[in-house]
Image (cartoon, rainbow, N blue to C red; front, side, top):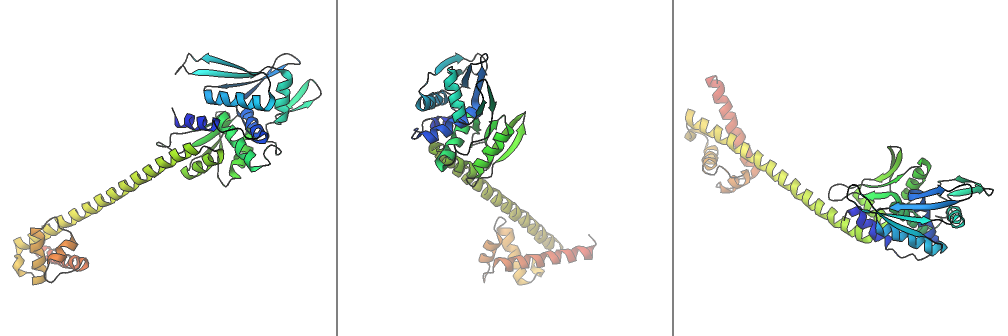
Length: 319
């Protein structure tokens, strides 16, 4: 099961506690997923199609709880791709359909035969904080998705209406988030890409199990990234130490060939012999071996003096 399906299944199991929130959730699902079908002059029906059985049950439960009307549920086998079941939920009664659509503010009737579709989010449906959360939850169930957080952080809602998309984005952002909207293949996509904001939105919708699962993944990814950074840093430091050690040994061997290490001042010759004996030692370790011990900066200063001697010898020899 994908992380998106896991999240939607959890949201679909949230108890329907009051009618105002049920109405807000249904209003969002209809706008994202509903199909108004006109059958002749005076007949209309409302349809929903989904491959998720939990969402199909949710829509059925909302319709029955709110309107107690006849609702048909049909299951069809998808012959393409993964051959998942397609669930079709249909309200065939014209009066019930009009009642639902008018209640959620999707249509405004002009007389008996004509109506106007309005995708705006009615303010009276989302005037309470709990109803705002329910509307966002319904929008996600009807047209949302979330990527596998192990790969990337991305949550989105897809709607065909620009005005509805902007209002949905504003509603999400009223909770202190920063969703953005983009046009993709004639659809309007409202999206979040930051892990922390996606966690907040899951909490707003009530997907607490999905939230905990995502947080676990985020923690593991952060630990993994920190370990990689530390390893890369240690590797870089080790490479620098090795390069420096090789350069120091090369300088010491050059002096030994040209004038002999015994010609060096005692503090430099002592360090030179130590470096030849302990080629993998760090500057700090070499300093601790000297008598008396010398700090890292002191050892580094002595190696710079050795390098200056090498430069002078090469100039004198013209090499």
